[in-house]
Image (cartoon, rainbow, N blue to C red; front, side, top):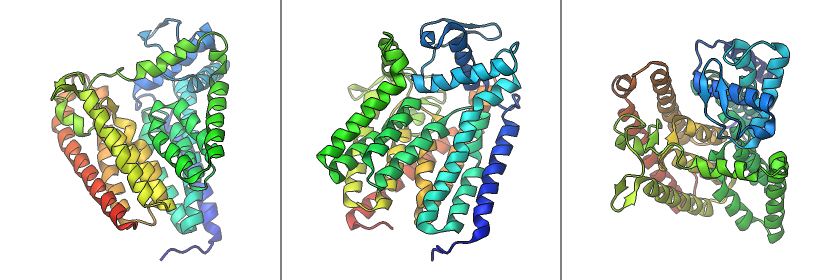
Length: 421
């Protein structure tokens, strides 16, 4: 029985929870001894390069840091480079003589992800509150705040999956409300932050075509186009469109391996180390990367069939979550963090579906374990064997495969019965 009666003190608790979450993460963010230096340093040095050489030269100016040597050129689209460029200016203003790698630099560069964490906590609570009541809203917010992998991703890893994740949740929420132009706006922003957000594109198009009118399609196309032109305008209108386009073309194949440390189906064929084998190796006449693409396309078709059979709002969120799960499990070249959006898209339905709560719990364990094993591998030289054996990477991959197959069976049963259970 879902209690929708307002409880005044719960709003105060929710606000206190958001403040506490922010304070804890801001306190841990400057502790550089805990963090993975790779992504954090890349963001800091990219921002420093944009500030020193000019934002528009960030894709072409060779980056050589006095402490860390030659650094890879950015493989992010302009919108998040604006963020790291602004962060570098703030850092330079507060400490003009400091370079990358300091506690202050870490705190500043992690701030957007921490703010996105707080925004997600509040947004998810608001969505759940409207459907299931304040007590469930507080429970979902607390779950997001305290489940380990959210803090690991934004504060320890220094990654920004919460930023594009925030806009992915907003996109699906707007699709639920049939506000297709806003959904397209939020999708385009999410995609501009991280290309992995493309998993929502099939669902976005399906919803507009199936539930909207022709004018909704054209309006959404216009909104997406204007958003891209606006976000990318400094580069597009100064003759640097090719540099931006290279980010798109270079992302696929940047890590040409069956799995880039994601414990999924392809990890079983990885040889226990993400660079041990190439995904261009042929299997039954086709490279592994092509087989991964075929499997994912099949998953997209299955997901849209499921959505067609279950047109209610819960079916929408379940479809979005399935696409995120399939994207982690089926294509090659997936990173360990790419399951993160699944949790965001599943959280709004936890009060409604007991099976989803069991799946959420199981995947929380395997995902957190995946992150921790990779964390130790990246911090300890030659620790791959450590990760594969006592870390149980193959066991985790098998569990994830089992959970994915169980999810497909569960979804197929719901679709056949046209009932969410």
